[in-house]
Length: 118
Image (cartoon, rainbow, N blue to C red):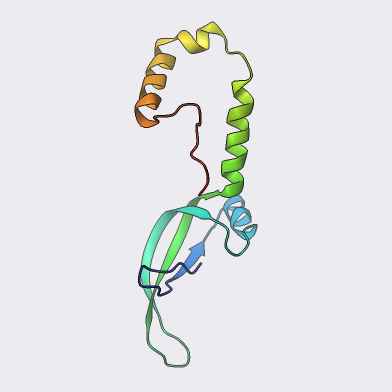
């Protein structure tokens, strides 16, 4: 991965994934696809073979991957479940009411459970 900085310089990020599902999600990406990664970041220095200026680089050992595919799949699952009626026990329990109140505090618009993709 090669994201750019505010100044327009590129920083090399070596993405390391040991779990097969993470590796498959990363390999399915095309150039320019959006991705969110979570994991352990280790700063390093990359030295070009031609003796050029050393550059900063990063190693990211990935623990979680979120792609546009994952977001679309989650939206579809959430929207599909809204059509199914819930039992009174699921929606009227103290736990359900508490979770709803916590969610309402975090998300101002509960009609759209996920923000639109940028």
